[in-house]
Length: 314
Image (cartoon, rainbow, N blue to C red; front, top):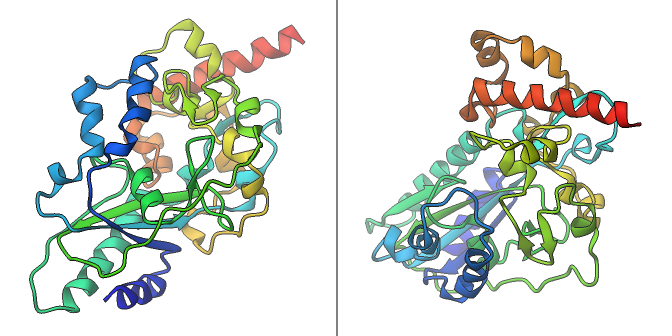
């Protein structure tokens, strides 16, 4: 069964797939508790809400297996020097060209359909990609897709960390589960030292309240937070750009994720001048469209101000 599923995943061009036994992730609670005590979580309702991310049996009471999958979106544009060109705002390379949520769900649904055909028994499958209660990264790690990097991303030795993660919770049992991968970061601190907002306080310690990626999605920003945005209109890739594993990672085979330079390095004036119709026409099929016209336009105004303020200081 496992080999048949892996074969189908390969046909669907799913880059990584692994199988983990469904167990509540209580071993991650000390890590979560530390972040709660330091107030590092952004925009959560409380400790109970955070704890739900670790409880697989709340999602499916009779779960037996979590199947973790990943799609690589590493393209050369993702590794461009973020200092060029100097007056452009930056949109994270993960946004283009097609919304990864849709691509991932299509592939997982096709995989589920195939799994249902492999047995006469009626098993239940629930698929998630960055939208479910559970932490995608925990299950990617448990299923052996990669190791936890110091930047809090899952890193695969040859594909790096430019990975879209998804998981399928099911009551289908698997005979042999995969094992977590050992950490390979060693003494490297590139992601910590280069984090522009200081959100990476130390190895594996992320203060999401200062993370630029989170700030570009936040509804209301304080003046200090506006300054932290720097040139980032949406998302931030710096801690991935400086990772040695990404410097030598394989290029993605998925053309639908390949951005152009003008997608990543954008004109703030062009975004500011957009009305809601032109915003929808340009971004409707991308991963930033959900955040909405008002906030992206606000970010472009902040970034434009930051760029000119930096030029004046120089």
